[in-house]
Length: 174
Image (cartoon, rainbow, N blue to C red; front, side, top):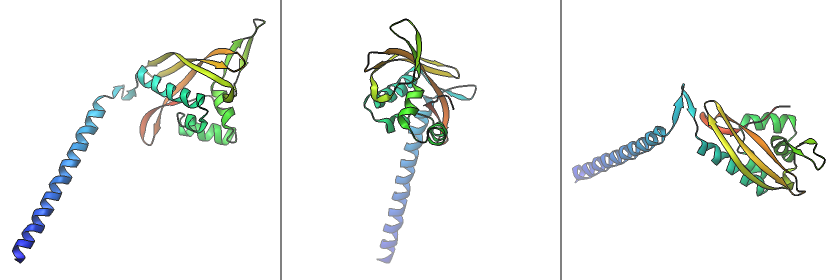
């Protein structure tokens, strides 16, 4: 009887070990399949126009929905820490507005700079995206509640986030 119990325990341990091995191997296969989709050029990850479009679309949706905390998650963490935290004392609307800076032509034909309050943005439309080696950007048309419409270029960078190359929004400092 003791032999049968030991045999049953050993059998269960073996079955458990096999199950763990199968799960681990399956996870590695899925992981390698995901890695096969990653394109690298000169050892750096190359993102596609679809990747840029997804990033910018998510950001635009967050701004239009007035979910500014979510909008911030599309930026590089170190940029948020330095620019929003240290320079702007956590003034989120100013941070987003300055990132969306652009120029428009007023009713007299003069070019004027604008850093919009995100609360006044009523529309954002992606006009084009670029995903060239080491250069990512998107041109976005912004509409404000006062009728002003302008186009701005969003700068995008590849940054390491949690040790993974990640496409992020990145702006000027100061």
